[in-house]
Length: 280
Length: 264
Image (cartoon, rainbow over all chains, first blue to last red; front, side, top):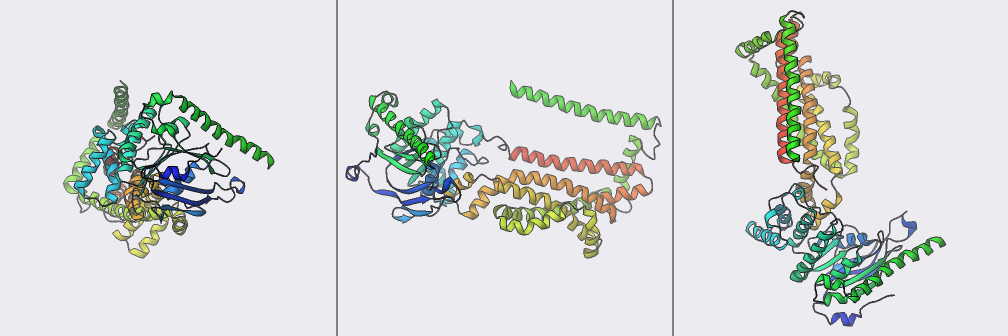
């Protein structure tokens, strides 16, 4: 079941320098989960230009892993290294895009994007330049002076991505950012994100429960199983090398094969747990 | 179509309110002018108006009407400003740390339900009969609603919003100033409105117990001489001032906090 690209093959690809390294990460909550760890001994390396999609059934610890990566939560054991330095708390090196857009509701879109730059003490003229650059990048120039509630769901999420990009983080963590959007908007956002990634080549760690989304976006796909939360699949996505349009990729045989494989792997997690649960 | 409909509804409700006020005025005018009620209990609108003009011209007992009103408002606003700049910061710290809250919560919960006049006698004893004791009394009555609304609104700031700010590089003090404070401001202003209401009621009561000036004192003093026309002027002025203050704050809320309640 364990499909992993050999380290050698991976190192042959461009820009393979490790950006983030998770070393023996475990997470326990006392009195919960029957004493089982939420996350069990996770080792993971994210490269500088990675686009990693993490799939898994709900409650498998995907979000806990993201919270640890972001520095919002401390792991029980193990540590997170960024550029070989320990990462202990939230920092602008690691940007986060949440499931809920999480824009500051009293600030206009441009003020939201400017916020991180202000925190970094960027000069006023430079802030102005960067804000208009990122507004342009996500196609929100005409909404600069609007408040978040005046925007549609997709626009809010684009503003949220722009706000994160503006601080120029080395890695961007995304926690099911498109799951609250309607199907059509979601598809547009996926295409938009891929374009953004191709422009910026930033390391993206993208959590989703949508297998198709992972296949369309990820350069690398991880699958987690629950109880205890662990990574069981780590594969390079061959579809990411394709140059066809999203629609063509979706109709290819390889896409449906991979889709079937991933879905059955995720299902397997549930089956295993049922047996496990009966034994206890 | 929809906003127009809402607008029409608003016009209709406003219209009903105006009709209700006009009706009361008509009943008042008719019943007093036809001598259905003794003018000592209920003066005619004309005599109330005459008393108002007299008060503007001659003042009341050695001080002009505006001095009485300004004396009252001075006490009110000094106490409110003091309460705002102590209750809000303290409330923010208590909202963030349950240990700090544990220190102050029992004190505030104890004095909050007490009728202010119950401890007013003590304040007069400690601080004297003039403005100091009144301002202290008003400060205490404004403090509790402001403090409580600040604490509860700090506790309701979404953790994700704080996390977002932290991961955008904000330090903890900056999160407090730029994220938590503006998140709570609408609730704090609502708390401030409540505080004004409570403090205003306390003010009039305090002036009635011990004072030599102020709009509350004027009403009580006039009632001793059965000058119900002056009593009426005083009451109408008090009500008008309260509506005006509340209206200004509501307008501010409307302009400043258009985003409240519109998030998904």
